[in-house]
Amino acid sequence: MTSALVFGGSGQIGAALLERLRGAGWNVHALSRQPRDDTTGVRWLHGDFAHMPPLPDAVDAIFSCGPLDQFARWHVQAGIRCPRVVAFGSTSVHVKQDSGDAGERDVARRLREAEALLFAVGQERGVAATVLRPTLVYGAGRDATLTRIARMARRFGRFALPGGADGLRQPVHVEDLADAALAAAPLPATHGRAYDLPGGETLPYREMIRRVLACQSPPLRLHALPMPLFRALLAAARARGIARDLTDDAIARMRDDLTFDAEPARRDFGYAPRAFAPDARMFGES
Image (tube, rainbow, N blue to C red):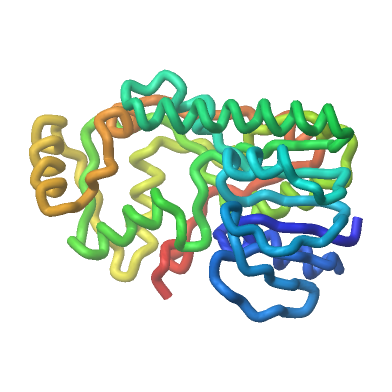
């Protein structure tokens, strides 16, 4: 494989993947909503799924690092010749399917339907598709969970969690995800399969947040609060426009174990993610 089309190349996973593709000598076309200057090995295309620019007639592989549902709908009608697709989804397809929040259930439904569509189209056209489902992503200072928590903690000088927030988590670094996509691409064993991609360490939610706060400069304190007090503080924060997207179901999940099996990915393409050892640069602090 020598040529690729990358969707979401300016995103946190996509940017790491582009570096690896360039380093491996690939010729890459990457799509971005904002105009970007070409670099060695990467030609930037200006557009999005609603306003697609002219694309190459054929590439060896397509990598999707953005919204899976939008990519799957585009792929149905895409005329580009390509035998290989590697697309990122999310373990939210498992986690949120039974959520009490309608918006979260819709996320899971769209992910599930997008995966099914991608595999169906691939089977019909003879395109080998693989879906990679990350868990909780970090590492580029652009994620919506740990980086947001770090920024909020820096703003207030501390952070609070409800008592019992000890459900297990497996945060995964963006660079390990980029390595996974590149490793899976040439291997027939990954064709027609979806893989959960957890990080290399399983730890309680509270410990995960403690490490994020401990690596800040100066280190920040973590407080465990009784649930009634936590909810009262959260209500006050929401009234000020803070943490409005922290739903009751998201709070409840802090006590749930959300763990996934990396063994299929290890077996089929040597997936070997790192343990969770954060530093401040991973959360937007230099």
